[in-house]
Amino acid sequence: MIHLLHRLPLFAAVLATLASCASGHLTDNRFEDEHVSYVIGVPGGDWQRMKLEKADVAWHSPRLAAGLFVNSTCEGVQDAPLIGLTNELLIGSTEREVISQELMPFSRREALETIMTCKLDGVLRKRALFVLKKDGCVYDVVYDAAPEHFEEGLAGYRALRDGLDIGARRDRSGA
Image (cartoon, rainbow, N blue to C red):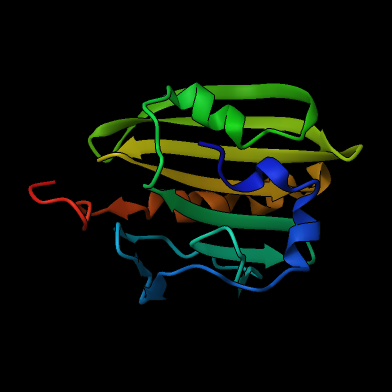
């Protein structure tokens, strides 16, 4: 199960494709589709909401040369460890250097947060990746920025991540 940034050579390139195929909708900071229902925090600042084909909800900041998104995947999810799911987000990147990696309790589960640098098509990027598995779904929160602007946009990422509140899976009885 490969998800989201695996085919994206550079997040900025994806920002040019503003078409959306997402089947869910965001209302008052609550995302819902046929599988999931969750609340997200608001990144604030100069983050501009946008539609991104392979994300539930996305923002970008032209000033920071950065993108921020949250995505859920419930179909075809295998019981892979969090590190494996994190690595799927890195397919296509090179020269990866993990700055920090931490397991943290989240939504009565463990989540893995990774801060790292990598190159995409030879361009250095810095990322914060947050991955959580719950009720047979995988939730990703990804912040991707030019390294020189990473710290500036980190508060938006943290607001989004910390505001994440995942409800019971909608398409399972008793979940």
